[in-house]
Length: 429
Image (cartoon, rainbow, N blue to C red; front, top):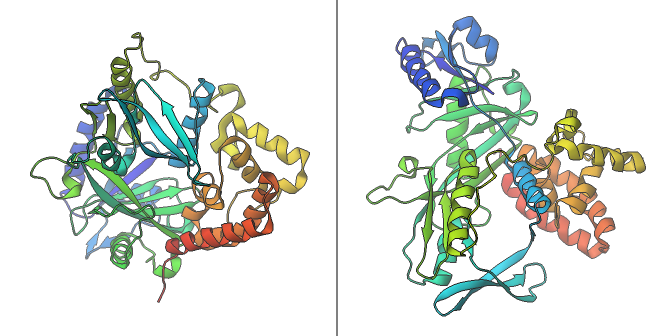
């Protein structure tokens, strides 16, 4: 994905241009494409809605650099399917209630069914890995109640606008905002994604909320760099996420903390992997599993992750169109629609999702709730929250038929989803 860094001041192009050329050199053969300078007309060709003037200064041109883009939820599902392909067992809605210890060593995890509350007993293991994101400290304290916190959670907020706010194929990067952060305006799944913020948060809610100040900051900053001013009425969804940043002594601002990962082994042998980011997830996995395998005294063997293709990556079955995110699984979803044409029906005119994808998420992707489907399998809630709310009853009906649930279950699911989804709808007044 190309990113345009606009230049409104005389120093902008050489300053950012030299910096990105150094970035090109450091990336070496892993660089996607080399960065290059853009004239004013070229900058507007790549980003047609870029403001021609900003703070009284005319647009002089810009720098174009390249980065990768992906769908985090779809990659997470692909990883789960890859685990299953490799003979692993994945479980969903199973909660870790505590750790099992014997002779001062952790030898398993106590489990419960998160849906029913049923005690599932314990799973024994030679090694237990704690990869609970921003909640790793809570798991560490199951082992060591007085363990000091190692994570400083940072909340980031994004909002979604219609595609016509960024109709081209490239993104815009605003390298310096009023508070020293950067702002991205990115084409994503047929919409325009704008963000992000960076603010410390200590309460660790399961469903963090964006504040009115976050919304106003993003909209006002974007308005200075876009030819069309976005307003609250234009926002189709807004959401917040938490980053597990690793603390460093003396640092307080989360925007200055490292995004690198850390591996920590407790006295009892609990392996905690935290920090990091999607860009380095394979390196994190390799180092974490190598450490766990050593503690478990498993025979050493080379890690295959560098060359391992993920589930759905079969090159002879490349998918196109709206089902492309499923890779080689797209043909199986198409077969569902061929067998039952009613499953080919769109779930909402504003979004590309079809009923067959709901059935597929239940049969092959471990979805259990309407929120699972509309937020963590399809991206409807993150793209257009009002549309997702309108889709919920139909999705619940499809799920009830597949899971053999009754009308009360449908009602409860729609109510629960709507309660969550309202937090993704921006207040206009």
